[in-house]
Image (cartoon, rainbow, N blue to C red; front, side, top):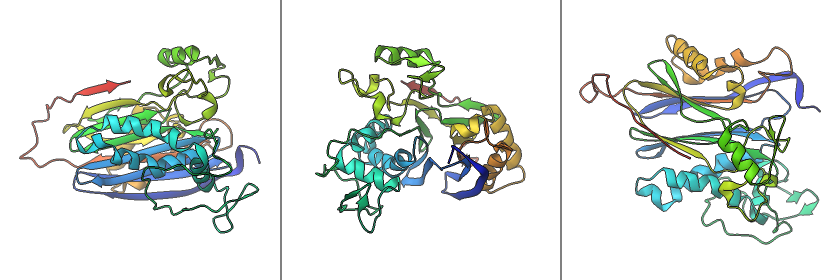
Length: 349
């Protein structure tokens, strides 16, 4: 089987929800791709005042994206700085922690389960008989204790995933991004990119790649990867003289902190399967148009996929597609401003 199907899979996984601060809808669709490698996370009530949304676009396999969807938000929650009101420190640590957790026997076992390479009933994994001590998807991360086994020296996965995460606490919005998935805010109809696509043509990315001993060929890292930051992709993180933040490919995210105001209508988090087909402004315009007649946010996500889906295999519109649409609920008139609120943005590399 090649990378494309003979006809696209247009079945969609969709859900919606919300609370007194926001509503959300999300959807994902395999499309023309032979496999579905995207994953997502949506927790409108991560705690009493905090919401968490994430899009994870896998490449080379689905296991890393699914690992992030399962564990990244848990690592944010458990960090001691989270309860003190700091979101940036726990988020950055959680991104880097994913690579650490995916090493060794326990990391290999979990990735094998998530990548469907393990028979959960017989314990057969790629020719080995192995009895997992716990495969319950509801298990807590705890201290992620190491395990002994035939893959104790596993260095980490060769496949990888982007991660674009939005954490909303009261009026503070924190966007944490590694890779080329993207978060876009609509402010009175103006598209505001709250994340940066990490591509080899960016000077800051090029400098890090070259200093770490890598190269860029035909627009790809070492002639292979078309993005420069990702979770996983262990073969690009082998320079033992450099910290994780300075490897050829790094999971170290850009972080943008943003103060929401009354002009802010909704945000979109989506994988590059959407942005290959629509610009940020085009998508904002389309969503605003749809909101005039459609109240179900998941339905709008589904319509975006149909708009982007290519008529035949090959080129733009043939990638997996995942999109989360978050709409902010307006505060009461007594607590709102006259619409001239000033909103600040603070970025951290």
